[in-house]
Length: 87
Image (cartoon, rainbow, N blue to C red; front, side, top):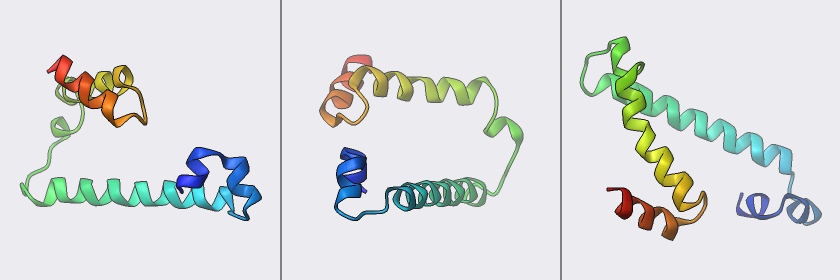
């Protein structure tokens, strides 16, 4: 997966199936998101639409998006610096 992330053409030249690797990554992320959603309902044992939709969810997601974009996607040091700056 690191090879496909870095350079898909180079990974393909080494015999890595790029399409299958990307499909596997997509399926794994979907499974992890589904598990997280199931645990988010199971652990507090309550569920309502306002827990996942609306201004509260947007207000919680916006700082993570801003820090990721300002810090640079794929750059851990930049994200840490941006989170310290915006916190």
